[in-house]
Image 1 (spheres, rainbow, N blue to C red):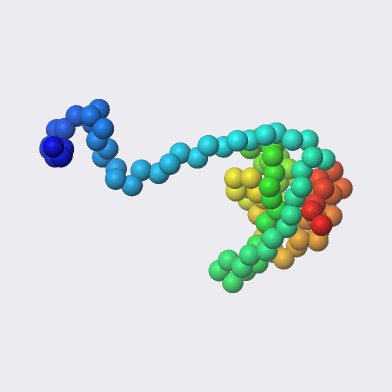
Image 2 (cartoon, rainbow, N blue to C red):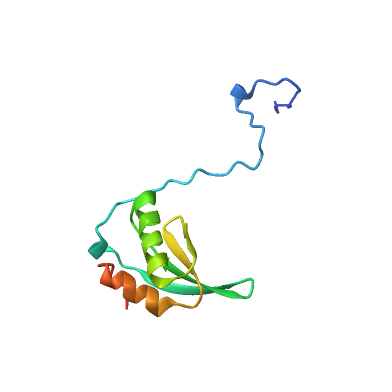
Length: 109
């Protein structure tokens, strides 16, 4: 017999109030030292402007934010931290790569 949803139904019987439930993201964050990273740069055009993206980082969120703050200050540009990546304003992949390599983060060739 098919179940019919009624007002005041007990949700413990397998009902869900949201028919578009999203699967939970399982974040498997393995913290690595700077020399164990294999980073790469990518460029995207967003709203007519270029964004330089560097990823993947295997660091805690706070350490990633500190790294971002230091690189932004050194390069004199804006940017943000998104999940496991750093996003910089502008077309500056060479400068970002040079600075991160000087800090011990290697890039893929």
